[in-house]
Length: 194
Length: 201
Image (cartoon, rainbow over all chains, first blue to last red; front, top):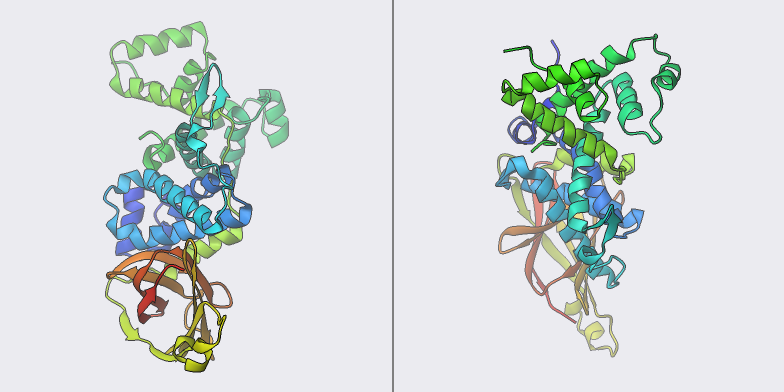
């Protein structure tokens, strides 16, 4: 008998398992799911790796303290973005510096013919965090194949992928389809398509 | 109704990587209509859009993640922790000769004791708020997987939480004026330093 597949459990299910059963693996899955989101925000706001690690620890502890009191367990990502940004500003105040750009919301970056606000970037960071977590939870072969097929620039040809992964000729199609179905199941549950 | 379209085919359809006959199959199925495949088509588009953007996320160092995972051992229990109020052993502000010395340190040094631990606390009023720096001291290894979590309470509510480091040291910075309790969480109990008065410089 195998245990639950944590990667395909929703945030509310993982939170409930952490709280009700003291399920440590459920807690670890939540952290792995959102680790990049929490850490990337202070990094993006200009903090050093050491300060980003401090923010990460504080936010994880706040999450643990507040798990039982989250009003919207299905909106954990949004809660983490708000809480992490708040911790960043608190740390900035402690440092008494203007190291992070407090006008960051106004710092815009070209994306095509329009500009991207920090808010939009955080939404993108949240989606990429969930996507990374989903890929990381898959078997290595699927993870490598999907990254090569979709998230590598320049995109390698099928022939190159066959060589890189030592796959039999003609096996990419069925493997790709199976891996995409698995990825879809995980993303449906982890809130990527909320 | 015809068979649902596999997600991989919908990805190819959104990526303009299907043959003419495959495209016709997809479009005729969607037109039946099939709400499930229409939803999956939208999702395939969103997934491709996410893949099309460079990944700007940064993974934290593994030891940082591991430490956060280990903190689960000290999560708030379902039942209340046994609360032990610590006794004040030393307060440099109560040492008259020191307090009278011109230019005496602005830091208040306190030492508390409860059960098997001592808690050394230094309170420093600064321009942007008060800094509390402390250390949990124990003659014996603490009975927990990780060093204690320390909570700062105001009016009974937890307002800040930090994990002490490997030496048991912890810090709260830029704390606003007020009266606080400080809780040190040990296995099955919490040692509380009550009524800490903090004021601005």
